[in-house]
Length: 257
Image (cartoon, rainbow, N blue to C red; front, side):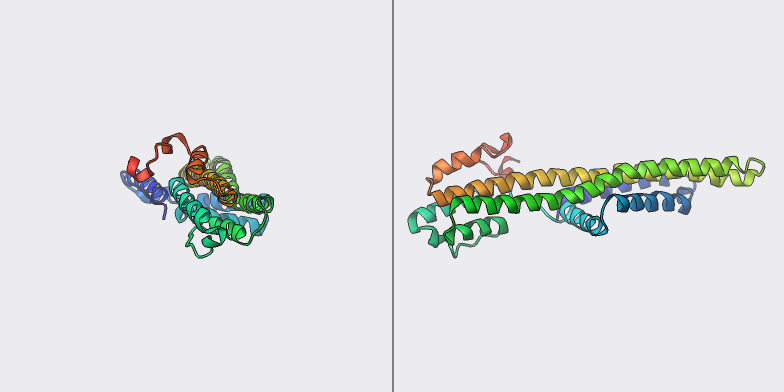
């Protein structure tokens, strides 16, 4: 569970809700017509841009990655690679067959080594797997980022609809209020959906996608180094170059904090 994503959304919605609740009648911020225009329009235009399967897959993948998935600590990947390298040098690659490896991508790479495939084939398989995984993550980001771009636009469309309704009823003061409510609230809804939900989720998906790509590159280099029989110390120095600067001290993230 990614508690940062959950906490950010909850606190954001809570603070906006508290601000709304300070008024005399919070129910004035609920407008069915405005919600239909913004939400319905945003979903509809996103469906136009993507295939139906891609849309639902992107939504599912996006929420799953943003709220549930967490990438492995690259420090732990290097420690595991060091451990596996020592076993491989001592017992050969077949000695890795029964080693427990939780990361499925790492496990696949080690299994390819155990099966005796040449390094060129292993590298190609792992790179293809990495490319497909990154594409799946990026699909969710693209869907959310497109929705973030469409929501404010439909907020403005709702504003125009509300203004037309208001101007069309200037002779009836009782209808001016509802028209103005649609005009203002749709802009509010569009901005909230984009800035509080869709855009932050798209940015979180981009961040996690970058971390995943870095980890998979690190694992690929680890697998190739293990197959080559690199000295564990030499391999550690090589893998260190894949780490961001703040992780190159030799301490885990929890130890740094």
